Amino acid sequence: MITNIGIHESSAQTVAATLSKLLADEVVLYMKTRNAHWNVTGVDFHAKHKFFEEQYEALDEIMDSVAERIRSIGHFAPATLKTYLELTHLTEANRADNNSVGHIKELLADHENIIMFIRENVNPFAELKDFGSSDFITGLMETHEKMAWMLRAHL
Ligand SMILES: [Fe+2]
Image (tube, rainbow, N blue to C red; front, side):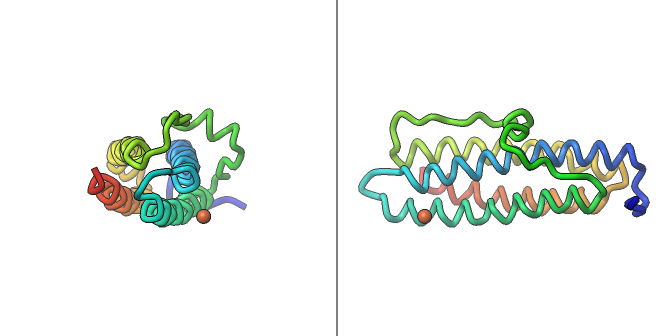
């Protein structure tokens, strides 16, 4: 069934390709935040264990919303780990130590990377007449900015 919502097909394809990269970043960041939740050690263990849980729960909702935005403009969301690793801008980390500051610095850098990627695409999405996706990622950017502040405040 054709998605007839006033966005040119090639425009929707361009937006979907960018949103797919964003989805890959969100999935990798979700897994890295899970890693922090599971493996963090130190005198601040309990507080950070809970904090990382709040963050990965937020990322779970974000992943779902990005995938469903891709569906809303008539495309399929990538949904294999192999594809995510091919699409992501982020690198998976293999931490040698598991203190909270190390995890926080790395997660913060990833949030900032995502924020900059989103910011670059707010106007291009609007120029393609996909005002919905432009507005959607603007809201997402604000969510990441708040999450980044929460991480930064620990440092
Ligand atoms: Fe848990």
